[in-house]
Length: 293
Ligand SMILES: NC(=O)c1ccc[n+]([C@@H]2O[C@H](COP(=O)([O-])OP(=O)(O)OC[C@H]3O[C@@H](n4cnc5c(N)ncnc54)[C@H](OP(=O)(O)O)[C@@H]3O)[C@@H](O)[C@H]2O)c1
Image 1 (cartoon, rainbow, N blue to C red):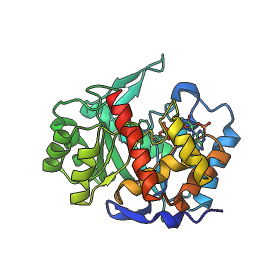
Image 2 (cartoon, rainbow, N blue to C red):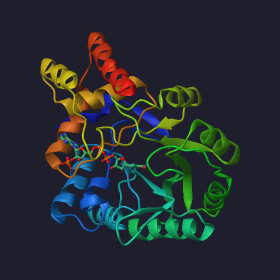
Image 3 (cartoon, helix red, strand yellow):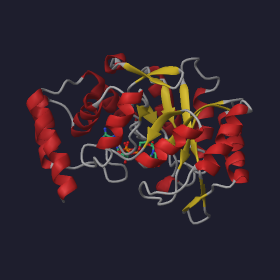
Image 4 (spheres, helix red, strand yellow):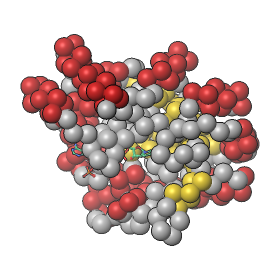
C-alpha cells in the first residue's frame, strides 16, 4: 500500500485534501453513458481508493447520467468525514449520449437536486460550473447568470463551495467578482499545457487547479520520451505523468480516472515518485513539442 500522504495536501475551499484524488468518470459505461460493464469492479475501485487514503473524488450527475453518483453512494455511503466529493453541473446528456449545455436557472437547480439525491447528501461539498461555450475547450462567454444561480443555491445551504470548469482566465476573473471560486478544473497534462499562465495566476491566490485528463483522457498519453524516462526510473509512464503534475505546482490536485483497481494502485503510487531535475527538463520538452505540433 502506498502512503499517498507523501504527495502532500492543499486546501480545496474550506477542506484540505490529499493531492492525489480520484476521478469517477471512467466508471460509467462506454462513452460515459449507461451502466458499467462490471458493476462489482466499479464499486471495488471506489472502495479501494478510499482504503488507500483518497479523500477527494470527482464526479458529476451527467456521467451515465446518474451512474457514477449512484455507484459512489452504493460503495461509500455513509461517507467518511474527511471525504470531499466534487461534482459539476452545466450539461445534460441526450438520448444519443451527446453532451448538451444546460444553463437555465431551472436546469442548474434541477442538476443540484439530482446530485444531492443520487449522492445521498443534504449539501454538496463543491460544485463546479462546467462551461459549455465550446464543449471541447475553454471559450469566452458571459458566466454571470448561471454562476449567480449557483451562488443563490449556495446561500440556500445546498452547496458549500463553488468552482469553474472549462474556463478561460477572463471567466475565472469574472467568476471571482460574483462569488468565491475555490477551484478551476480544466484540461491539462504533460502534453497539453495551454493553461500554464492560468495555473501561475491561481497559485498567487491559493486557488486549487484540478487538471482533467491528467493521463490524456480517452487516449492515454503515449510518447517515446515518456516511456524512456519511465523505464530509467523503474516506473510506469502514467506514474511519471502524474509525478510531473505533482511537481508542476503545489496547488495542483490530481483526479486520475480508472475503472481498474490495478491501475488505481499504480496511479496512487506516483505519490512517492521523485523526478530528478534532468528528467523534468526532458519531460518539459514533450509539452513544448506537442504545443508546436
Ligand atoms: N470538467 C470536465 O470537463 C472533465 C472532463 C473529463 C474528465 N473530468 C474528470 O477528470 C477525471 C480524470 O479524467 P479521465 O478519467 O477522463 O482521464 P485520465 O485520468 O486522463 O485517464 C483515464 C484513462 O487512462 C486509463 N488509465 C488510467 N490509469 C492507467 C494506468 N495506470 N495505465 C494505463 N491506463 C490507465 C483509463 O483506462 P482504465 O479504466 O482501463 O484504467 C482511462 O482510459 C474524470 O474521472 C472526471 O472526474 C472532467
